[in-house]
Image (cartoon, rainbow, N blue to C red; front, top):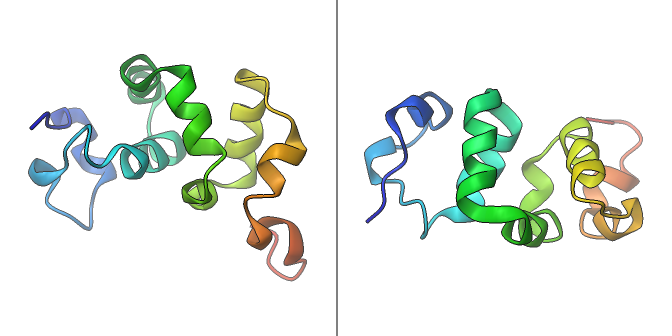
Length: 100
């Protein structure tokens, strides 16, 4: 079991961070660190999982945990079209009363 670094424990407040496995809980970790992590944590997540795995996460329904701002940033960094990412989340695109 590959454990998350102690520096990341602050991003996993609702679980026991010692039980979070880097490989088994990959999408959970990506969502949490990409949204709440500092520069070093985000850089380390990108290094560990690689751009292909990040794209897989961003194009899955699991990426609904990301804010529009975070999602847009990764669209630009990973050269994804907004249409590719919009179709995975009806919550983001169809809820004008709650734009966050």
